[in-house]
Amino acid sequence: MSTPSPAQNAVHVSAVICTRNRPDKIGQAVASVLANVYPNFELTVIDQSTTDATEVAIRDLLDTDPRLHYVHSDEPGLSRAYNNGIGRTTGEIIAFTDDDCVVPTDWISTIAAAFESEPDGDLLYGQVVPLHLDAESGLTPSLPITAPTRLSRKDGFRVFGMGANFAARRRLFTRVGEFDVILGGGGPLKSSQDYDLAYRTYRAGSVILLRPEVTLRHDGRREAEDWPALLTAYGIGDGAFYAKHVRCRDPYALWLLTRRLVDAFARVIVRAVRRRRLGGGQYARGMLVGIRDSFKFGVDRQTRLYREKSKGDR
Image 1 (spheres, rainbow, N blue to C red):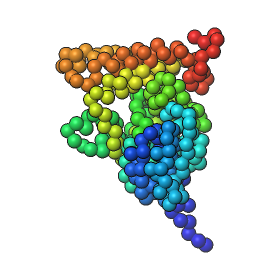
Image 2 (spheres, rainbow, N blue to C red):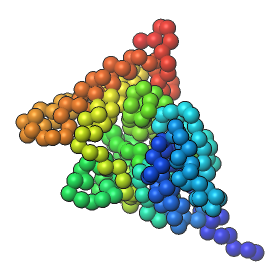
Image 3 (cartoon, helix red, strand yellow):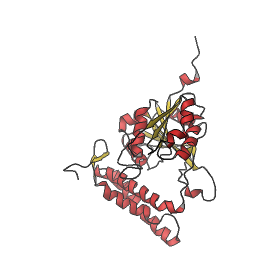
Image 4 (cartoon, rainbow, N blue to C red):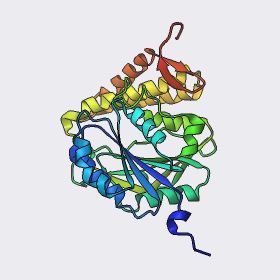
């Protein structure tokens, strides 16, 4: 009798990188994922670029590594790209990272091990740290996690997440649906598709895992002049995410929204007093815009997804 290979015993993992017009970064991201030591995975690149430069940048890897797959899509929007990645893959676990991230060789292994240790975990977020740990690393979006944590109806919940480093069991999307295409980068409501998925996961009674050992580095430094627009987009997405669930007559979402607004405007006051350079009131004002713009779309209260507004919608 032959002994099963490690690949046969390992859960199949589908890694996904969504990208748009970053041919200078995508090669590094793809190569880092392909360097992983996990024995049973594939990598799919969902490319929404407006030129063929991204495909050209990874052509040598496509020609030499059968684990790498490439899909070009003309439909813009990060949530659409995520949904495309879900639909184009077959792994029991789907691991997502960004085109400006570099993952360690055990990234997939630590994701698979975390899910194996927590059989009821359906969604996982890992740490995101700046690629360059210099004095101005605060200019790079990051996500610190200090200890393993469970978020659920039993364990408690907080709004948390970042699209640069997360994974999910495929069964989660069967249970709660896919990403809301109105939310997210490139969508009408700018961002917060990750928060929205996490909240729908919590609402469905599933467990979210926060795992510090699942760590990657983010090569996504923003200059100081870029942050006002970025914070505005974050605020719009957050306001729209909360508002959608409030419109579903969800009292907990209303409480979360109220707390977030109070916190956001308190920070505006503190920053004004301290005369801090970054932050200003862009995020807080963006939240108000997001709440307002939520009403440009209808809401399906059963799926908790936005939809194009029809006559009679409120």
